[in-house]
Amino acid sequence: MPTDNEQEAACHSGGDEHDGGRKSHHSDQMKANLMTRLNRIEGQVRGVKGMIEKDTYCDDVLNQIAAIQSALGSVGKLLLEGHMRSCVIERIQEGESAVIDELLVTINKLMK
Image (cartoon, rainbow, N blue to C red):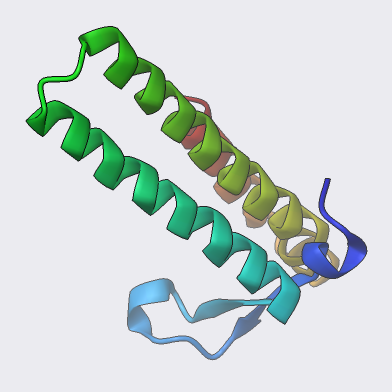
């Protein structure tokens, strides 16, 4: 469960044309947590590549892939929670109800 500091994130204007002008500003603690998780996942992916190169039994590789998918899902949930608690609330308060449609599209992508 993320702490209050980890949940801090806010979308602000000021990005470039590639991100629609919005940026997310996570606390240093949240960034460190996400980077640690993503580095671990990156290592797991490299491990799976090594397993395939070594002709490791398919079931063992599939179990590692399931672990990677679960870890990515956890990162996604953490980001989604922070997004909803900050960016979405902020945009709704500013009268941007279209953020709900954007959020629903994102949730559908995450649930595939």
